[in-house]
Length: 289
Image 1 (cartoon, rainbow, N blue to C red):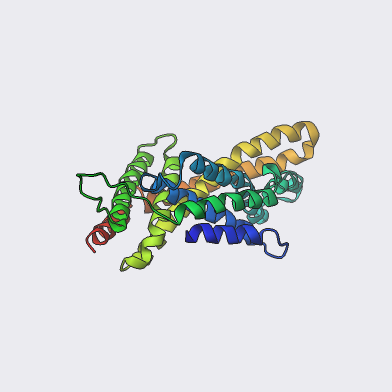
Image 2: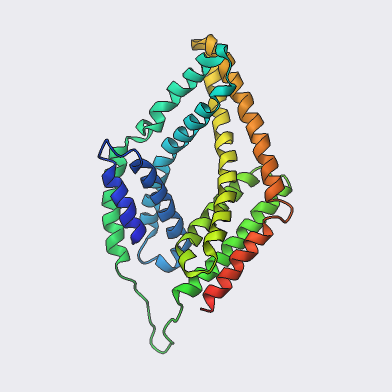
């Protein structure tokens, strides 16, 4: 309920031109809301139906294109000191093609997103304001508590992430992407519980560090095909831009290799185990509190 309210507030702020953080807060709120709705779907199936979950998923995906473009632009700007004088035409070419997407034009515009979510939020607030439990005659009433359900989910997500991290070590093709998604889901599940766990904030900070590192690699992997497509278009439309785009492609490759080394040094070959075991201990404490 708090997440719905926070995300709705961010959606209302997007109608103002003097609040540059509103779109970011809206996107983050949507991701958190969708992730928690997914994690607790077994318990919330009467409140968040499959159709409602699909609407939430669609809303989150609409904003992801703008978020990706925004991140790609920020990374390109951060590389300015490594771009040579004769390569700036290519940097401008790529940036000009990314900027409309970062503003949300490709997904129908931020006002449409906000309007759509306001309608969705009304339904969510109504559905989540009550919780129904079915009690059958002749059978004991369900006694499952939130802390038990949350602890079980933490353990389940830890097992999943442990397997994903191990797959990176084995060199599986989609392992980095899968581990990023798994880390994100575990972090969002952990965040609302930190206030209940002694030392939980430190564990959450380490969780964020892992997710951020995996996210940086994913962002670069997503940028590379865009750059290759821009290079192909520039060969026909603006050949002077090609050297700069080639430079950006080389820089993404160099940066990606560096990030993979950091993952290997900090998280692979058993190094993530301490973090996962700490979360599992917190889950055990939570379930017996």
